[in-house]
Image 1: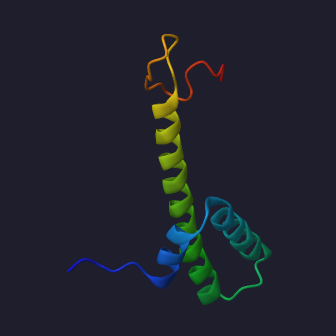
Image 2: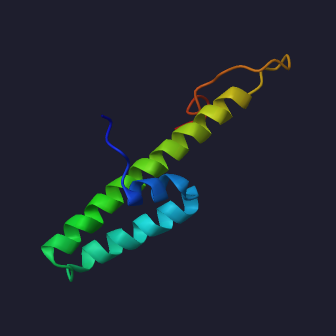
Image 3: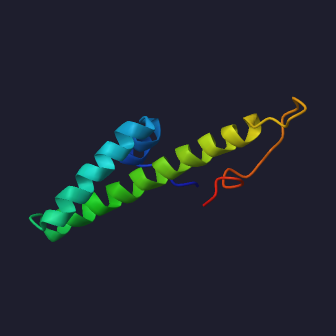
Length: 88
């Protein structure tokens, strides 16, 4: 039987990228203070991992959409690597 996603995991995937990133930044700030108990720190860390994963998934989807929409000079759509031609 497949493992069901946790409540936080489901929430993370349902959030907008911006909300998930804001929440992740808040968690990082809380962890950096060192004021949390070990148990609370572990729970926050786990939540942060889920949020980071959800953010990465959203970025990957956005990148795929952008790659599909890059046009060639002749007006046809062409898949291109986003890093191509960026000068970086």
